[in-house]
Image 1: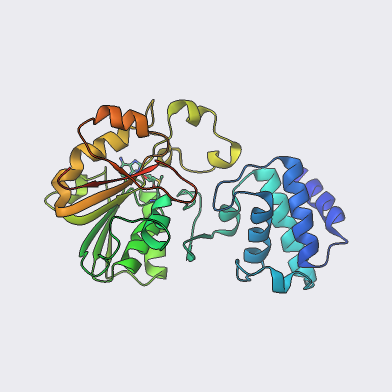
Image 2: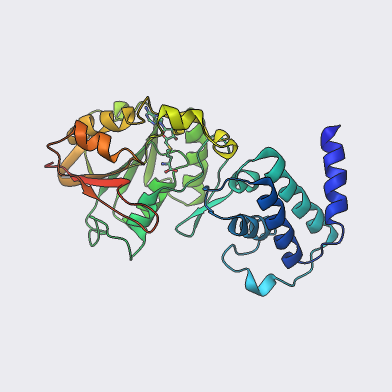
Length: 305
Ligand SMILES: C[S@@+](CC[C@H](N)C(=O)[O-])C[C@H]1O[C@@H](n2cnc3c(N)ncnc32)[C@H](O)[C@@H]1O
């Protein structure tokens, strides 16, 4: 009943909107008024609105300008109005409403079984402007492990970047692995990416890798208790990891040497846990890999360390 009334109200409010520019302007106003929270692939109301409008109309998400004055059909107007309204009333990140997220320009299917891909590791691996400890090793890396794979996005980026590599990808969540399976198939990597269900390294006894990449859960208990509504749509097990957020990172650091080839190393994202981890592992020579939007949130450790 309430939904019906809301739909009728939003239809009235959007009756006069006809162009992409109209819907973009309206969405930005609605999002600002509703004080939405971003961080799932976009950082501002404008970018979120542009993503919803372009992806919702099956247009290239990086090409707004040529379409701004294009008129929408009546069906498209209805869809736009519904998407904008859903973003405000449900507080779901746009990626969930559209079942699509992009990272480093690659598209991934997403739904609420996985977090929306946004790992800084993608930029470190793929962006020429970011420093990567494996730069220049694209053809020599033969085995990669993506621990805590979620949607499979980092495993797929790794398979793309390292053409000679076999990639193993692990997640504890059977639901997340269903999503990863779909993405692996969509990207044509069924012969090079193997998915495992299990607790961190448990399914990989005896295996060794040239490179481990991992974006594990690392949100501390206080931040988990204060999550904005948008983040509550993501699986809690993908975010939280004990009181200081570092439970899983500690376990990974403890076990990783056993699973690395000599000369190999691990790239691990840890959010705000740098001081805690450096205190817990004082003898390790962490190399911190910064990106455009992060400082000290991702480290590199070589096998010898
Ligand atoms: C922060 S998400 C990262 C997902 C993906 N790699 C990305 O960057 O978008 C963390 C993932 O770790 C998984 N996870 C949580 N605890 C785990 C464990 N003990 N062993 C393996 N995976 C785990 C969650 O299910 C979730 O998919």
